[in-house]
Length: 515
Image (cartoon, rainbow, N blue to C red; front, side):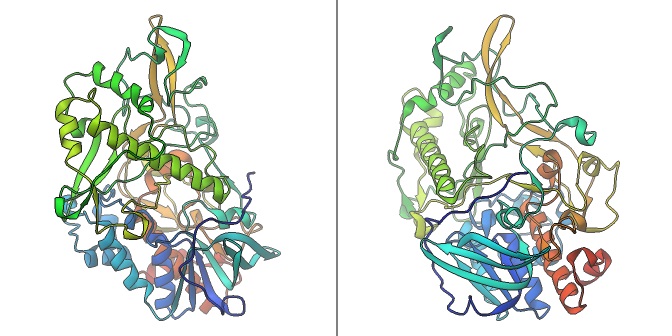
């Protein structure tokens, strides 16, 4: 089992709590994601004294970090505080195409929740240690450079995308993809399908046809693996990009740091392989947001996903994680600059991308670029109930549901490799899966609970207990919000009922208290 090794953070702090080392809270939430905020607010509404600790300088996770084109699958699953949030933000879930919003709009609503008098909000401090007695967490230590704070609490929730608290507390977890044989699945493990793929015939070598010249940037020399086989590979991360075409509100995109046009040579070959594709939505998912802004996501064989460059992220130190984030930022800004300026880019595509720039009124504190890398998947707990493909397809039903999920079993590509077909070497992406679920299906309360012998006062609503392919369906921000609220209500039930463990909470009591 893997273990997280915390080191001092390079993230600065915005809040210092002089009382943090002496006060004991009812609940400590680690991770100020959308899920964490809902957990904290639900518990505070129940009368608990809550502290929420966010390791970065921005609350709200990806919901406030650029993911304004909300992935849901079926809007009927959005209930409770999550539904209230979307109504507050001004979206209409009866019209899914209107469920769009800007980062600053989401942040504004989240800050309203965090203003609850029962919540103390701390940002800029990352996990640096955990103290346990037996199977119970007693306190956590969080660091900002050489400065540290200690937070004592009766109950804890890990709502981070990385699962650092869960891991440091000695809870079992997985990274990477399971072999299909382990849980009787078919869409886990190595999958080389047609989605977000290169057409046949795109040469992978620097000098076409010459293996001795080496591989183009972004192509791995590893063997792709047998179909369905498990490995430690992680689906690709990217930034969800907020741009604007308003000249009055625009900061132009200039040549970024570490710009290297050779990184995009494979993209030029993709242009040549599909000459009829010259539009911006042939190479990006370019979704329009209110206020003449965007939420841009990955599309096709070569786009905003930085495939294969995140494998060490889940277990990495905070210093190494910052390096990975910076590499993704350089790659993504370089991709936008390349597409807007390089003469080898189709003219229609080049003109369209050149019209857009960074919005002056978004991410003011971080140079108008989102500070939040899209961590699609990191650690996954091995808890009381492991959600699998069977849950997604309806051949198994969790008996203790506290939330619903409805999105496609979705994995982005995990690697870019060389394959041979008819004696010819060509580049292919591997790992993309987009398979339907049977209908909205229940998510078990025990998918948030560790094994009792490992920890009795921790809930994990984000890095929950699921296989890689099932997690691909569950891992949507509205579902995380619903699970976060359920976690907050569960802690309140445990605290008020004098229970000794989160495992003792009856899921029916949680459902009865959901807003």
